[in-house]
Amino acid sequence: MQAKHVLDRFNLWLEQSDKVLEYLAIEDALNLMLGFYREIRIDDCDLANDGDMLLFQWGVEQNGLNAHFSYNLTRHLVVEKTYVDADGEWIDDSVKQLSLTFRYISNLKLASLGQGNQWCLHPEELGKFEQFLQTHPATLAVNHLHARSIDLSFKHLE
Image 1 (tube, rainbow, N blue to C red):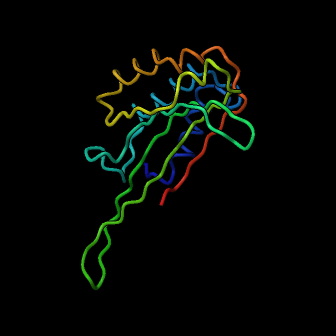
Image 2: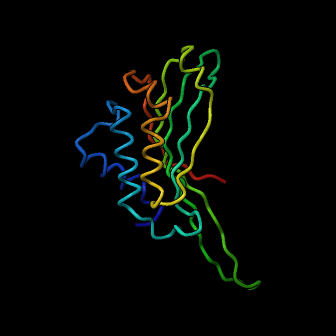
Image 3: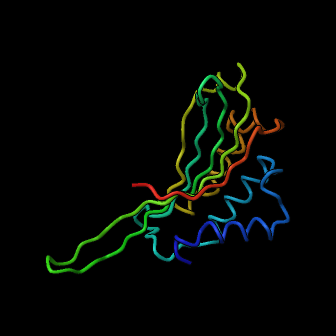
């Protein structure tokens, strides 16, 4: 599969799981994103050179006057294309991200978690990464909370 089809393929993955995006629990989101990373390879990304990674991000975000706690899992893809022109051969790297973001009304407990991120650089690290996620204070804090919103997005970064 090519990176440009990752959103459609993830939506199919979600549909086949019998889960609905708007009603996902954190545990379901972890299982879906980790399973998708474990099972689905992206042909135009070089796995050996950090072309296909997972990113976990958490923390309070300010949106105008309202603060919310964000819990995010992102599949980070670097697509390499080789071009040949009159000046020779050159490589263009474009970055794409499939992101699943849960937003919660912030409170003192969530705010006390600070913000941060953790990368999984290769599927071989997935077991360790999964253990990290399952025991992370942010996961434990939001595990039984109702998300204010759940968003799935696919972005091209410059």
